Image 1 (tube, rainbow, N blue to C red):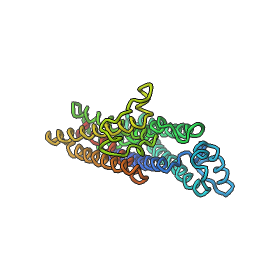
Image 2: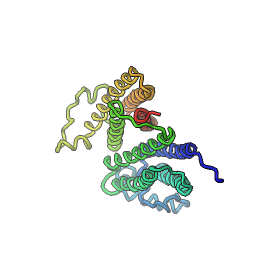
Image 3: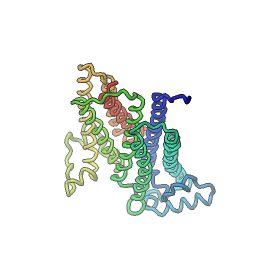
Image 4: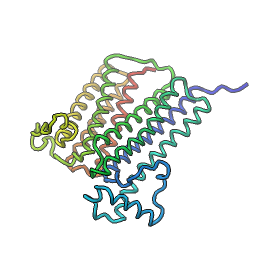
Length: 343
């Protein structure tokens, strides 16, 4: 008689796999941020999903790659004095970023096929897991779509496409983490609803939007302007917030407005998570600890952002700030999951 497989053990194995995928995506976001901060993203001017896995292997290969880089505006207008050694530095950052994307694809696909063939995927999970894999492929295309925006008429990538690229990465991370948490906590989860659950979901959305605003700031290098705090351009409410026409352009292309919105979003988020944490604690909620951790993380992220801003975003602090945003998102999702499902 064939021994029956333990469904709890199966779910834990799936969960550990998805936690691993989530961890790799966190690393990918960090490396992507460093690639942006080191201005390395345009060093590879072609998209070769398979053959691009191999870097230049000879001196002639390096010269060919360098000549391709010399043809784009970033080199002609900014880096025209670059040596081959300096080009190699930015090339390795971008190559590493793309290579990590390929690794994540394998980290997902190989275990996924094993679980699928061995029929270990629980009912209701095949569609979201397949969707997660397809989103990963789409993310690779979005990354190239972003790079393309800086190869012809610009010296950097479009802030719109950068925000799209980061947003997709955070969405993939969020879905992977949510599935991992659900599988880990078991099948005896009872869905809950109510004001606290809805507000926790709203906080997740607000964290996500704040991250996208941060991507706009990064895409425009707006964090290196208006580095005074708590004032901005010498005033609490700076002039010129709506200087562009039409008015809607200011929220995406005006350095002053984009950074101002990111600041206001941070203040609003901090006030809301602090109030939510106090309420959860007073109600003796089972998610009170995660609420407090979320509030502490948002406060720490705010302090880190202020310090990075006042120092004109040095690479190390900029990377830490991006990693902090991911940590806040993870905690907000975990907190929502704790409120949504009671074991």
